[in-house]
Length: 332
Ligand code: SF4
Ligand code: SF4
Image 1 (cartoon, rainbow, N blue to C red):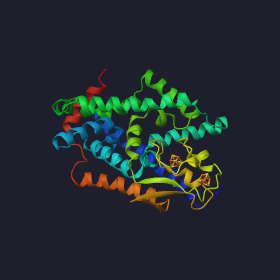
Image 2: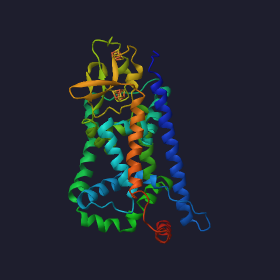
Image 3: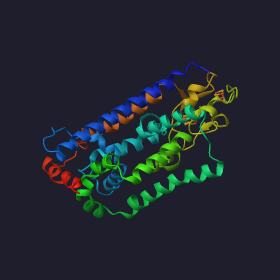
Image 4: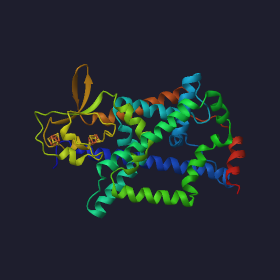
């Protein structure tokens, strides 16, 4: 059913596509940067700092290091800035990063949409399997937090930051895909098949980053809220929710699985029954749906802009150092 707020779904698809294309562009630029050092004669291209978004473990280490010492490590500072930006938006704006910005979540969505076209529907795990599998992302998250957040001491981190391995963590991450091993290939095939069958397979069951953001999002003030008096119990919201939440039965959606996609809001045919709301004291104030992505993206770039303004964006690795280390990676 088309509602007055159906536009928000289209806006989201547009925003997701824009971020996905931007990510591909960054990946291409970074590949050109690496080629310059790998293949003599290839023109030099500036390293795009945003590529550090693909180093969330560096981001976590940098955050711990920053909290312990007050220093932002200078090798991959953008990893720190983006990690903080993503945690901050999740704290304030639910898991909107997953629902609107993250290119992996977008690809995941394309897969299940493709699967729905292919098989006429998406499949649903039995409840016990779904619960057991969902715990995997929390187990992975706990492992990372324990190993990096607790066990790794700042003096150990400094030693690691100085290694060639850490300096080229971005190149090595790219090579996981650019120079794919048989194991990576089969893992990707496995994930692709399951992503066709099940909605958001990677995000729902395996992504430790999403698990962390989900926990933070529970403390946020912005939520999806349902008004029982206006609700006509048409089931549209529950049916539309890609996170499989029973929105129709909730007063306020508090689940860490909610990605703030607003698909439920855009599907609701009853004006005033389902809205984005902001908690103000004991009350909830209804927000226009379009304000959610606007605030989300503005806040995300505000934090990144603050990092840039503080000089914590560009890596301090000199050209000569890349010239020494990158060819080493490709020596067989
Ligand atoms: S509850 Fe609404 S906003 Fe949250 S994931 Fe489901 S459809 Fe998206
Ligand atoms: S909140 Fe809206 S979409 Fe959900 S059941 Fe009620 S009327 Fe239907």
